[in-house]
Image 1: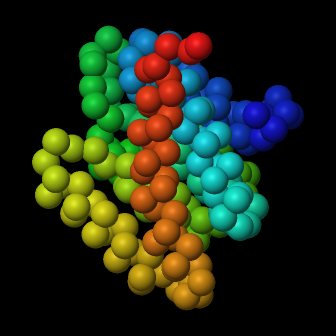
Image 2 (image 1 turned 30 degrees about the vertical axis):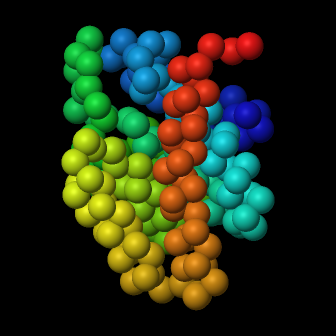
Length: 178
C-alpha cells in the first residue's frame, strides 16, 4: 500500500499497532476479523471513495476507518469475539487511543468525525433494529455536520457503499482464490 512506503510514517505505525494487537489476540491470520480483512476493506473503500471524488483528507479518514472498523480493544487473547463497534468508538473517543497522534495522521476533527461515523455504519447484528438504529445515528450525524450540501449528499451515498465493501472484503477473503 502506497501509504506505508516510509517505514516510520504515522500510517505504518498504525498498521504495526494493529498487527501487534491481532497477534496478541491470536487473530493475525485466522478468523473473519483478521488483519488481512481490514487491509482488503481499506483498499476497496479508498478506491471507491477516490472514484467518487473524495479529497485526500477524506480518503485518509476512509482508509483509517476501514483499518479500525473491526478492532475490539476489549477482546482477550484466544477468546472468539464479534467486534463491538461501541467499544471501538469509546476507545477512539478516549484521550489518546492510538500510539500516534491524530495530528500526525493528518486527521483534523471533522475527518475524525467522518471516521467514527463510518466505523459506526459497519455495526452488524442479527437484530435489524440494532443495525437500523446505527444507520439512523450515522445519517443524523451527517445531516448535523457543518458541511456543504454536496458533502452531505456524497456521504449519504457513500455510507451504504462503505458497509457493502466491508461485506465484500469478507467474502473475498473467505472464498478460495482461483
